Image 1 (cartoon, rainbow, N blue to C red):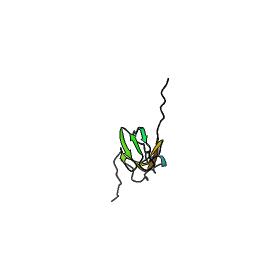
Image 2: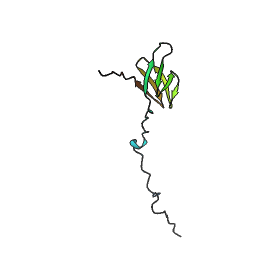
Image 3: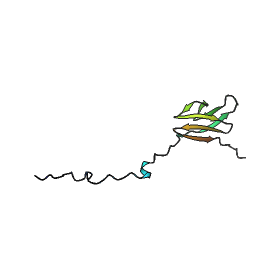
Image 4: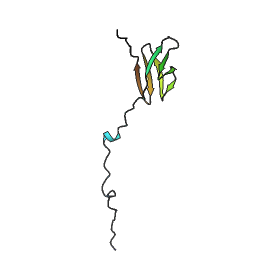
Length: 96
């Protein structure tokens, strides 16, 4: 008796190796920081505070999944996922 190999049309051919994933397909999606608006900084060398999205935060706090790593007089460093981001304080000037 002769054995026959039967597979369903549209299914992967069992005699063909699966295609290798390209480096592009394996690359994880880039980490995007959630919208964080730095509106002000109360600078103090020992206990700096920042106003982000209308919330007062200090170093070590978390806002929208982003951990506040460092507050400087003009910027805030945050860690989101495995990446570090810097949010700069924008200087506003009143027009005459």
